Image 1 (cartoon, helix red, strand yellow):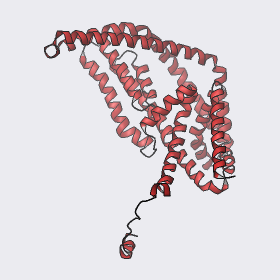
Image 2 (image 1 turned 90 degrees about the horizontal axis):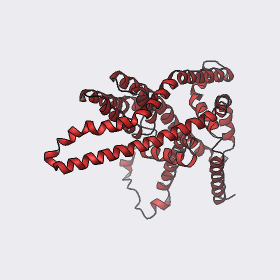
Image 3 (image 1 turned 135 degrees about the horizontal axis):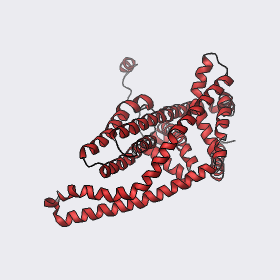
Image 4 (image 1 turned 90 degrees about the vertical axis):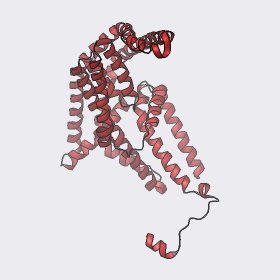
Length: 367
């Protein structure tokens, strides 16, 4: 088989896989989620094995502990979060009417600079944009209710996730060895190196970013609740979770939190405290959490991650969101590998002057 035929075979295989994923996206969620959980928990199982435990015992202990903790958090947090979400949806129109009235005195101070007509135009634009925001949030809320109902209907299907996670985690090493045995022997070292780079990228980003999001969610939720912001916990915790999307999550949480603070508080001091919670959270994330838990070597640019999440969600729904970051990591690693080969190839170097290596003495000194 020639190189061109191999390329066509890989391309056809990729297209068939994407087509099957698209056609089966309605039933793929528990399997993709189970694979993600197994990948996330594999280092813990490996650690227990190094301590002398069998793979079966380690898998049973880790899987049971993970899902018990997840269910405990769900039981404790879900009722409060759901109740606050419903109450927030009911009060959004009231908040939307209050915000323009609170901001109007600030805009009136601009009268000497932009004139009364300018102030009136700004107030009109603010009220119009607030109305549009209310309509958008109402559509979003309706969509959330639809999704919640859909998820409720799929609870029986989601129960498959722990089973999938258990079996994948138990057989993880065997699956890796089996896939390794299928690799073309002539390129096995190169492919292993790229898979190792992909694993390093995913481990650094996904495991680290999930930890960062949970810590930020707890910080924002507790901080906004202590300040006294209505629905502070759900807004703060939601902001932390959505921070998985770089910049976008914090920006959405900041806008919603500040809007509620302006509508709720009569003193600007409390509005400033709400803003301070978000500022401190960003300082913690940028200077401590992300550098320590994620690092700078993952090689996934923020814009690339945002594009991957949006594209995956548009094409495959929630399954696409789960697969977006792994796919972005794979594409990123392969693109860097391809660019490295291109920069070393005659296609790039053709016609270039030979490198200046100097005389023999300088070469020995450099070596």
